[in-house]
Image 1: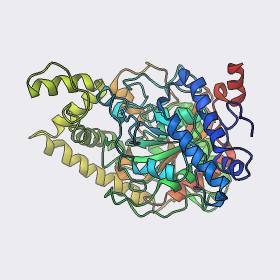
Image 2 (image 1 turned 180 degrees about the vertical axis):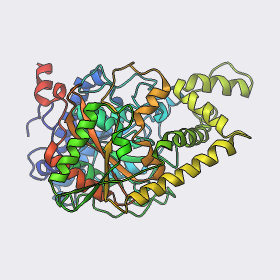
Image 3 (image 1 turned 135 degrees about the vertical axis):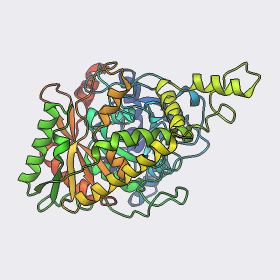
Image 4 (image 1 turned 120 degrees about the vertical axis):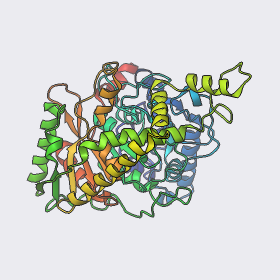
Length: 504
């Protein structure tokens, strides 16, 4: 077989790649080499990758080709030959896992996270570790110690965060799918900003073992893809119980099972307080209203539901999140591993300077806030009430789902903002105003691309929110929306024809 030109597989779906492999029209090595060629050519302008795993990827591709040559094509895993990238808070043996922080700049993983392990066992070709906000603290991927990632639709804009590299890699066609993590919107928001299908499953659906923790009661791993089917296939491959994570659940759902059922008879919840929220841009609101109208036209029933305590989600999150972050980041003490400032003879001075230099401004901000919130005399005043608010929000969702099957809402109040545009931390936090309550309640949520906004001509996404462990319902509704609005394309400047033009 002749070597494929760069970009030959950039827009291919998982089923298409599988058909090409099993039909022996292409080899897994050709697919891998094509992906690495695109990364070499294009990532300089996007900076989605912090490390490219060429040797691991080619080794995996050769193993797939050997299995096909031996007549075992029918035994290939569901992600066989699929280029996949991993957010750089996910351990993969022999690779750096930096969390985009100077603190872990030289840390090499001695083991592999369960979600990564399962993706590789399913045949995924690892193409690299992806940029992120430092320790997942951010909504723009600007807090990375190694420089920001740029939005493939417009390189003057952010890709969202904290999983910005995971979204950008898929929409620039440098990976077919990727994995990210979501603590308060860090999968769904970059999915909306970059125009990718982006899934935060119910808490416990995917093991967190081997994923560097931010907020242990909030974090969840999920996929980015350019189609609902590809996202569902990827989630199928990585979900399920893991004895190494006490919060993981024995999920056996096939998330592709009802993608073709349509939404006739489904009840779609609309939350008026979300649709009338201060700060929601007119172009985003118009897209969500259009999505609701399309679902109704496909036979769904629109019903209004109330989430009376959702307005308190932001306040509760910025108590619970920093408290858990403070606890989780205490292990990075410069003694066992992590950045160690030179020249100190006393342990206290070494701790102080190592953590001051190793952690960036946002990480330090959240560590200090968590330390304060967990201190004597403050703990009872803030932490306990935040947990009580968490219970109220969870109960609100449970009551809402008595009247609907899935909730439709905005993902972000606006489209992607410009690099450097938001410097105030509070304003940055507000970009997650529609996503945080889902992490607090533990429900599943996902972004579905709705095309470009009328004003900014940048991607807009709709958020679908499902009851806990009923994520298949949001996939069903997402497939219906995709049938109207279309699958997510590779961003025009990175489409294979455009890439070929750049190469020429």
